[in-house]
Each structure stands twice: as structure tokens, then as C-alpha cells.
Amino acid sequence: MISCGILEKPGRWRSMVMASIFLLAFSPAFPLLWTILVEKSADGLFGSGFGTAVFHSLIVAVAVAATSVLLGVPAGLLSALYEFPGRRVLLALIAIPLLVPSFLGAIGFSQLQIYLGLPPDSFLSGPTGTILVFTAAAVPLVLYMTLVSARRLSKSQIEAVRLVGGEVLLFRYTAQAVLPAALLTGMLAGILTLSDPGPGQILGFSGVPYEILLSFSALYDFPLAAKQCAFLTGIVLLISTPIAILIAPNVAAGLLGRDIEPAPLARHRRAGWISLLLLCVIILITTVLPMAGIIRPLTVQFPLERALQEVSRTITNMFIYAFTAGFIATILGFLLAIAAGRESQLRRAVLIGLFLLLSLPPSINALGIIKLGTIIPAWLDPLLRSRFTVGLASALRFVPIATILVMRSFGTTTPSQALVASVHGVSLTLYIRRVLGPVLLPAIVLACLIVALLSTAEVGTALLLRPPGADSLPVQIFTVMANAPESLVAALCFLYIAGAASLLIIGWAIADRRTAA
View 1 (tube, helix red, strand yellow):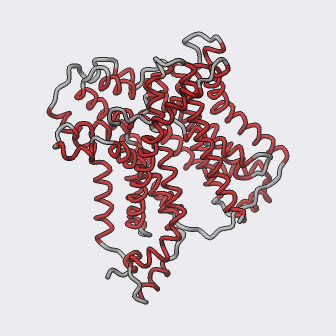
View 2 (cartoon, one colour):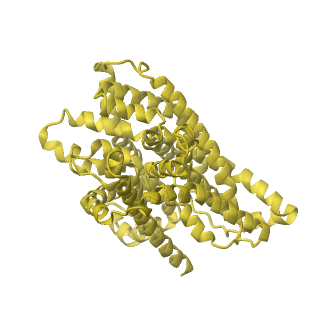
View 3 (tube, one colour):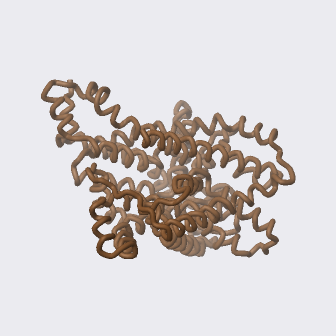
């Protein structure tokens, strides 16, 4: 019988569990190394404009990071410090772009450009339009990180600064306190743009992810796609590794439980109106304008019956992909969180690995799995050539999200619980079932749902790995948008966004009810 005291004591099992999970998470990329070293492509790495695409993508990434910080930090601070009309509703609406594929925003801006009669090279297309689409998801990330960081400041700290210098000094000092976390979040949002081909393909912007997709899907040059993906991965690691090393100590300390009383939201008329105006402007740019472009064709014709047929055909696959990803990612995240425990060095090591894993382009895992699927025996098809494969690849992509949520919940528990239980001879399984499990259950359920939603919105993995005839709804929209009637594409986009918004509202209402209780 294993004692529950093992959860609070050092041991070699911690390093073994961590190494095994990270090896599994990074393992799909290993076949690409063999491809790069052995196989030759028909074209050189930079012979088809790939170098120019890299430069353009880096410019877009920097612009997205800077814009998200400039908008997200003030909005997050105002939301963290002040009460204003519609605060909770507006904060919920800002999260919608995080739950839908980015190419839906690109479709909306493309349709809006047609409706306004703008030329093909207007600010709603090309690099500027691509920046707008990516910023729609980057701003909420920075805003929520700023909001959470500011709310972790104690009531005494806020009141002391407010007493000395008023609201202006409070805003300035609070901004200084949360700026490092906001900058790192903005950089992560910029890095994530380097692996998403959807907006660029729709808005006429040839970036790195589009070149990789073109090499694989149009030129059928797998070695070239592998080399391009490896080069992109090298750039991402070069940028993200220093960031991960810098952010890990602060995040590791922040994930531990802290017994503080957050400051109540203040009622300040001028700050409240500024907050309301800023959040409304952000929602207008990131949600309302793309939705207006999507809805425009529906004012002429709404093929609801045809759209519902497509939804009913793809919804089963979508749920299988989503909840396979959520289930596997949550299990791996739980094991990583327990293995890291409360040891500072282990938590830092885990967070560095998680940040790097989240920064990697999803195409590197997808292409690696495809390569591995060509050399394995047929009896392994259910593992690497099925709908389970799509869920597994998405789970490995979003393990960091589940791990951080479970680590945060585990950090609120006290070590004395496990130690006292071990003195009384409580087994590990009984302790997890009766004590630790109920405590972590809300975080586990939340992690599963968030990973499921994010994996559905990340269309690149399913696009490359889905079996024939097993499209999800986002993949179906992405594949038919160039040939299907625009009213049908608009109807599919509308139904998907409406479904994501409904789930968001339900989740927000449940969280609000639990908070009130």
C-alpha cells in the first residue's frame, strides 16, 4: 500500500513522471528530424519565398504583441480596480474570440470589406487585416492576465497607494506591478500567430504557416514542409526559451495559495465611464465588426436547413475531437501537477517546459504524426490514423492549460492534510478519492472544458490529421469557404459562434452563481 504522504515528500518518481510526460508531448516532432536529415526536397528552404514569409510573419507577431499590451493592460487594470455598468457581461463578451477559430474573424473582415466597397488592398486585408484578426484573440489574453494579476494585490496595498496619491498614482503603480506578466502574455500571443495559417490565407497574406501548409497540401513536398516547420520551431524556441526562463519563477510563486483579501471594486464615475468605453471599443473591433461581416450575406438568404445538415454531419466528430483532447490533457496535467508538487525547482522546470510546449507550432506535431503513420504497421492505425489521433495531438498541444489550472488548485491545499492522513495509515488512492479529488474536481472539470473548446477552435491539427470523411465543423467551414455559396459559409460561421457564445454564457452564469453562493 502506497501512503498518501508521498505527495508531500521528495522522490525520484517526480522526475520520472515529468520526464515521461514531456517526452510524450515532444515525441511527435522526432520523426521530422529523421526526415530532415535523410530525405531531400525538390526545392531549397528559402527558394520559394519562405525567407520573405518569415520576415513578414515576425512583423505581424511583433505588431500583435505590442497592440495587445497597449489595449489589454489599461482595460485589464480598469476592470480590476473599478465597478461600472455591465462589467461582468462585457468581460464575458471579450472572451468570445478565444473560443472560435481565428479564420472566422478573417471571413468576417473579408465580407465587411466587400460590403463597404473597399479595394482588395485595404486595411481590412493583407498584413493589417491579419494583425486585426490575431489581435482579437491576443487582447483578451493580456486583459485577463492583467485582471488576474491586479486582483492578486492585497486590499492594504491598494488602499495605501490610493491614500497617498489618489487614483492616478494607483493606476501607475499597479500598471508597473502587472506589466511584466502582461508583456510576457503579449509575447506569447505574438508567438502563437506564427503557427496559424487561416487568417493569412483568407486575407491574402503569405506568412510562414501558409507556406508550410502550401508545401504539404499543394506541392506534396513533405521534406520541404518538414524543413520549414523545423526552421519555424527554431525561431520560436529562440524567442520563447528566454521568456520561459524569466517567467517561470514568478508564475511558480503565483500558483501557490495566498491568503490575501483582494481590494473591493471602487466606484469612480470618470474611471467607470472610461472603462465602459474602452471595453465597448474592444468588443466592437474584435467581435461586433467581424460578426457584422459574417451576418451580411444572411440578410439576403439564410440557408438554415442546409447549414443544420452540415452541423449534424460534423458535430459528432467535433465532440469526439474536443473531449478526447480535454480528457487526455486533463489526465496528463493532473499527473504533472502532482509530480511538481510544492518543490520550487520542479515547479519552475515544469513551467518552462509547459511554456515551450505551448509555443511550438501545432504543425510540427501533426507532420510528425503523419510521418510516423506512414511507417507503422496497419494494426496501429487506431492510434495514429483515426479520430483519436486528432484528439491526442490537440491534447498534447494544450496540456499546459490543464496543468496550470490543476497546479493552481493544488497550490491552495495544505501539506498538513496529506502528512496527517499518512500518520493515520490512509492510502494514496483513498486520500485522492476522499480528500484531494473533491478539492481538485472543479479545476479538473474546468480544465477539461477549456481544453475541449480550445482544441475545437484550433483547426490546423484537425485539418492535417483527420481521417477521410471525419470533418469537424470548423474544418468543414475552412475547406468549403472558397467554393460554397457565401450565405452557407456565413450560416455555418454564425451557428458556430452562437454555439460557442451560448456555452460561454452558461459557464459564466454557473461561475457567477457559485461565487454568489
